[in-house]
Image (cartoon, rainbow, N blue to C red; front, top):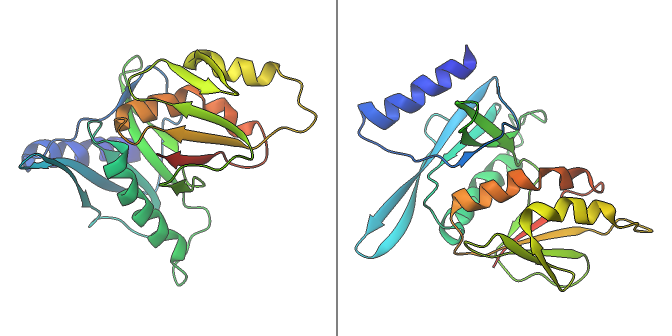
Amino acid sequence: MKYLSLIVVFLFLSCGNKEDILLPKSNVTIVKYVQDHSPIYIFFRTKDKDTLAEVNRKNSIITTNWILNIDKRLPLRIVIPEVMKLQDKKRKEKAHKNEKAENYYSYADSIGKNMAFIPFTNVYYKITKPLNGGLILNFKKQSDSILIDNLIMKTNEVVDYIHSINYAVNPKIILVFDKNMSFEEYLQIKILIKELDTFNKEVPQEFIY
């Protein structure tokens, strides 16, 4: 019922108020249900020749799970700074903090025909070029290949490649995303490499550059 209510609220905002958010699409569901949630919307806007991100979080409650509904057309260089502000606000909350509350991105599962979610609670973004010191995966805009360890390979092969190497100690994974990449492309990559979250104890660092 909670899941159904999310769809109804989203459609009300989309249609009733003449607002549109085009959600990213994938062919797999990571998380299907999120209970006790607050929706946050980040809309795609244009002004003259500029692209803008407009955040609507008036219905968010700090103690709940947050679901970010982000327009897939927004480039990372514009939308991630807004996500960082939201993360920072929730992390700094002391009086009403809920340690169990998570943050999720929403997307549409094109196969299951349902909304789906992927958690990003523990992700710390940096808007800069990473320093050396880990296993760096570089993802470029509109490319199905990545650069890893001075090797170029298909993005859908990277998880198997990393797991095939017998590391003495698993290295820290550093993800680098092209700042001009669309949010949809970013989320599709995140879903594709989700298994890397368990590669070591640390959540992969993410750089937008």
